[in-house]
Amino acid sequence: MDRSRTVATGIAIGLVACLAIWVGARWLSPAPPLPELFPIPDFELTSEQGEVVRSADLRGKVVVANFIFTRCPTVCPGLTARMARLQSEIPADLPVRLVSFSVDPRHDTPEVLRAYGEKYGQDPARWTFLTGDFEKVLKAVEEGFRIGVEGVENPDASPFDIIHGEHFVLIDRKGTIRGYYPNAEPDLRQLVRDAKRLAREG
Image (cartoon, rainbow, N blue to C red):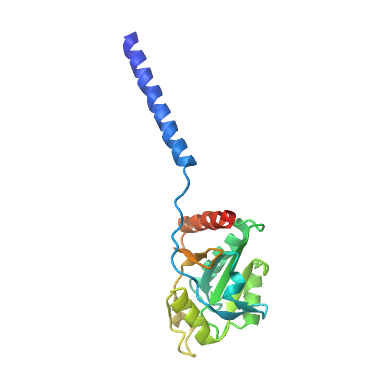
């Protein structure tokens, strides 16, 4: 009986030791690198402050981008609220820039975007809203970032006629897209981790 207990205890200790080694290995092993997808498009647009912003101006920073419009009655308030959360969850001392592209540039002037950003607690030093010439904006969003947009070609389109992709896009310091993240809580938590990681990699 004592021998059986000794054997069982030894097996239990061995299993615990193996589990500890496995957990430690997973904890210490580096995460696999994020994929390098393709470069962001060249663009020259206007910020909510009325300043010209070029794609080259974002080099050297990790960028989180999303796509919204201020008249949107459905998903955009949630998308913008989540971007506001990213602003609070990513430390201000990391070189991470948040950029929201308006997919309704005919309506979303810099003044409109500025008021919209203020409503969500935007810090202009960290978070920029972009608008500009209609064709240039749509080319950057659809052809460059590969985010679908429908309904905006019609100048008389109602807010309910405009449909666009909801993904957040992560871009590294070299201007290469490293990931698309759905508008869902687990994915955005991963986005925060990945943005911090890229920013700290230098």
